[in-house]
Image (cartoon, rainbow, N blue to C red):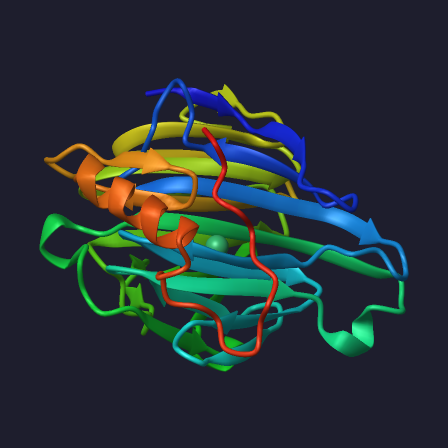
Length: 284
Ligand code: MN
């Protein structure tokens, strides 16, 4: 159990993020090994925020936006605009490269951006699988609307409702917004769980969270929220084997990470069609 403070970082071009995972206090929450909370930011007209092509192995990226939009391109040749409420689920498996760029007609305008990007580690059995990309439009993501709160069930189950998103292992991701003061119970046997506060006031298992903090726990818990709170629940079954992480690579095997580093450096890694820029391999 931990209370993790998101660390604020400027990714460049005023793209302010809070990085919650991995943390010194807890590397993973179930299969979740990385979490960036992006914004909310106002991006000035003409400001460049594009993420140039870069590689991944051994993980799935899960992108979910609250405001703004961006275009995803990958080495499978897929091009997809993501808007708030949609889910982009990209599985790297043995290797994928992608870029995430502003939509061309948005570039000349001031715009707001707010979202989450997760990495979930792939289980041993599937970490070398073929890469894939699945887009789920907002209309496919179940939403529960009560007088006290609303919940989008983005991955897994909540309150008897299941998401159609096909996860890489057993997990949950739910987005909550409250209308009134209320209590919400969670019950997920054998799951590691985390509640992360985006805005407003909540208590998780009687502990008051600050904005950009995540409290982790196991199996069950209760959130006591004020009106107008926005928070997420994530979690899942933990892995029996260790995950290594270097830059954008996750693997059960240090050798596979070394091979991916070499492939990106010598340009034998799959490339994104139509893209000539790329993010170079960092030294460390
Ligand atoms: Mn990426």
